[in-house]
Amino acid sequence: MKGYFRNIYQSLRTILIGMRITLKYCFAQTVTVQYPDMAPVLQPRYRGFHFFEIEKCIACDQCAKACPVDCIYIEKTGPRKIPKGSTEAVGGAMTRFAIDYSKCMFCALCVPPCPTDCIHMGNLHDLSGFDRQSMIVEFTELAEQGHQTPQPIWMQKEKLPEWADTRKKEWQEYVHSDDAFSGNVSGRREAMSRALVEQEIKKKK
Ligand code: SF4
Ligand code: SF4
Image 1 (cartoon, protein in one colour):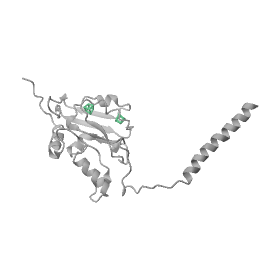
Image 2 (cartoon, helix red, strand yellow; image 1 turned 120 degrees about the vertical axis):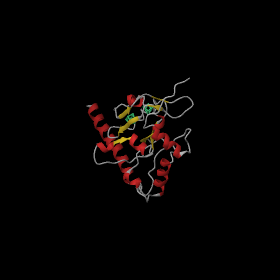
Image 3 (cartoon, protein in one colour; image 1 turned 60 degrees about the vertical axis):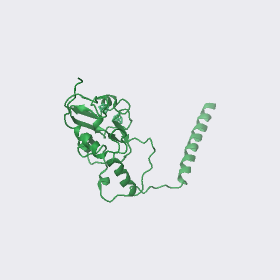
Image 4 (tube, helix red, strand yellow; image 1 turned 90 degrees about the vertical axis):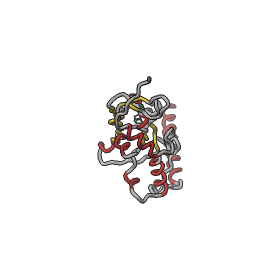
């Protein structure tokens, strides 16, 4: 009998706790962000669409092996390596580096195993498409156009809100990449193009 009344008490108590939280939000001030006119508030550790520094990638597959949902696809024409004293990988051409964002969980498990620190979580959050195929981002094709990260279609317009224009410029000038090419936009672009063709690995004399 005692247990019966205890159950009724516990049920009523948990309902009241839930209702108290619901009522608190009913009377809270509504905050509406006028996105995309206003920038979305993202925390510094936000994990958005990757940015990929193809010129440093040695196509070792470590990121793909670490991915719990197997959504990274890498193809190359031969072994790649970064010679001593350089920050640019040479060897076989990168023929494919793609991520299927219809599967990606944005867990960032692909980032720490990378031996050359060339795959990172970015700060872009809105990529949309009409079918699953368009959710596969081909980073090698982006590299051909000088991009490290996919950009939302609306961000490719000429007239943009100030915050979006700033973010777009940051990506076009590779401000997130910190290495020997820092500040050298055209130099990095050339290195990105070189990653797409075979480069001779010079043998030590
Ligand atoms: S963020 Fe996670 S799910 Fe997405 S590619 Fe990296 S390891 Fe795979
Ligand atoms: S772990 Fe890094 S270097 Fe290796 S394939 Fe992935 S991105 Fe390229």
